[in-house]
Length: 415
Image: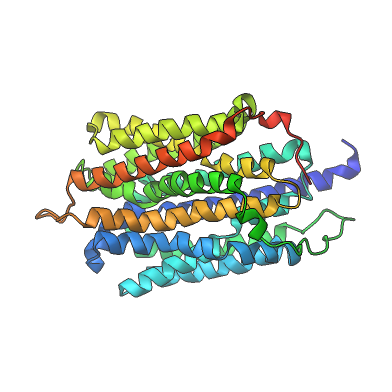
C-alpha cells in the first residue's frame, strides 16, 4: 500500500461504517412491531387486519419510492439523498411515538418506511467508487449481515426497553438516533474519492417496459414476492403474535425466541454469498426455498415450545438467501438492464412484505378470538400454509432458470 493511498483506504471504511449503522437502524425499525404488537393492539383496539396493514405500511411506502429513488441516487448522489430521507424517518418515529389514533400510527409507520427506503441501495451506490470489483461483493454481503443484526436489538433488548420505558419512549429516542445517523453520512461520506468527479446522469432512455416483457424477470420476481415477502412479513410482525397467541409466551420469552430467528437471518445473509459462489446462485435459491417451505409447514403444525427456537433459526437462515435473487437478476440480464432488474426485484421483495403482512392479518383475523383476545392456533396454521404453498408454486415457476446454470464465479460482472 502506497502512503498516498492510506487516506483513501481510511475514508473507505468510514463510508462503510456510517452506512452500516444506518442500515442497522433500518432493520431495527422494520422488525420492531413484532415485540410491541400486543401493546399496540391493546392500546388502540387493533384487529389483526389493522395491525397487519399498519405494520405493512413500512414496506408499502418503502416499495413506492424505489423507482424515483434510483433516479435521485444517480443524479444527486447518496450523500444528499439518504440523509434527507432519514430526516423523514426521524419525523415518522416522532409521529409514531406520539400517536393517539390508528391514523397517526399508520402515518408514522409509513414515514419511517419512506425514510429507510434508500439506505441499502444508497450504500451500494456509495460503495461503487470506493471499493474495487474484487472486494465489492464481500463488502456488500458484510453490510447486509451487519444491518440484519439490527433485528437482534428488535427482540430481547427491545422487549426489555419496552417493559422499562415503554414503546413511546423507545421511538422518541429512536428519532434522535436516526437523525444523528443521517448527519454522520453527510459529514463522513464524500461522493467519490479525491480526484474523481461524480459521474453524469446514468438515466437511460430505455424504460422498464422491456424488462417487464422478459419471462426470466417474472420467474425471479414472483419468487421474490412470496419468499422475500414472507420472510420479512413474519420476521417483522407475525412471528411475535404467533408466539403470544399460539404458544402463550410472555414478552421476555418471546423476545429470546425471536432472537434465534434473527441469528438465523444474520447467518443466512453472511453465508449466502459464499454458498452461491460454491454451488450456484440458482441451486442455492431452490434449496433454501425448499427448506423455507418445510419450516413454514412445521410452524403451521404448532411445534412444541422446546423446538420452536430451532425452527425459528431454520426459518431465518433458509429465508435469508432470498437476497440472492437480486444477484441473480444482476447476472442474468445485459449491462443496460441490470440496474432496473435489481431495482425491480427489490421492489417485488418489499411489495411482498407489504401485501403479505396485511393479507396474513386478514386471514388470521377471519377467525374469532378467545376471551383473552388471542387468535386460535388454526388461524395461524391457515396463514402459514398459504405462505408455504405460494412459495412452493413460485419455486416451481423459478426452477427452469436453474437448468444448466453456471455458478457466480463463472460470471464476469457487467458494467
